[in-house]
Length: 314
Image 1 (spheres, rainbow, N blue to C red):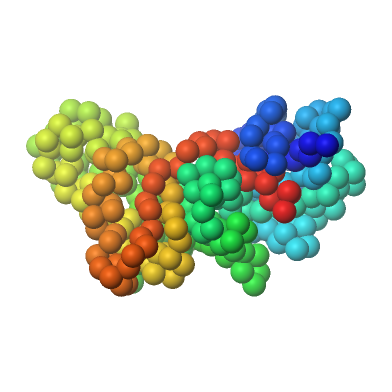
Image 2 (cartoon, rainbow, N blue to C red):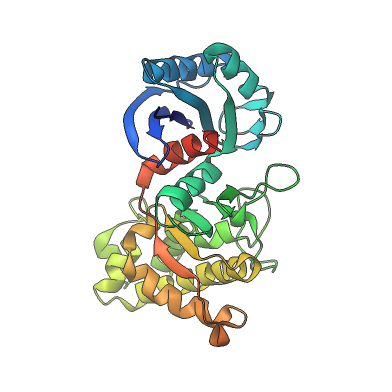
């Protein structure tokens, strides 16, 4: 008998759900708007309805949910989610009562990391670190096929690793200065691009965008067109991202580091110079016969639902 699992990616805008097999293949998908602000119970009623719809006529072994914020899978509680305005909500118990199926919870970035580790860019490996370079820097650590969640369940927040502890380091939304998110997120890259444009009115960046229309790719496009100011911004961005990745490799030495998010769409234009900067910062790299592979993630927006479903399968 084939066993299936349900994966849910709960976001501030949409609830995405999928029926997934044991190999991480999606058979069916469904979604609904999150329609915030509203109560946690109301949101979970919609999650339960999606799960019942997808499970109809199937043998389903459980539900996995990727949720923004701090979650404790051991107790099935969402401890705090700023995006959802939830605190200390027993999500696991509520969904299990509504669906009759066992429920597992993970932070949404961790769920996506598990998806990439088990069914995406790191499939077939024993260890992976996945970084998402978006509005912030999210990520997860997967060792032996399982998420590393730590003592509190909130481990694997690479974006809040401080990489430059100086008074003038950029401020992160978490309130601290100089963390990886403040240097390596798409938001940080856009800030750096705007600062360069303001300092260099002669830059070719102005031919591609104004201060209000700058995107993460703008500076890469200008660099490829030969603009020296853009080249300096890209080099600075890659340097700080390399520092963060090298630190993670030195701690975990995973087989794969996978990058996802809008900035990672640059592919080898980002990865090739990034690899060149990371390797000299990795302890013992010159003598190691095994080296961490730095690659792009492959599952896209489906990583979250696939990872959540495979969490339910564990």
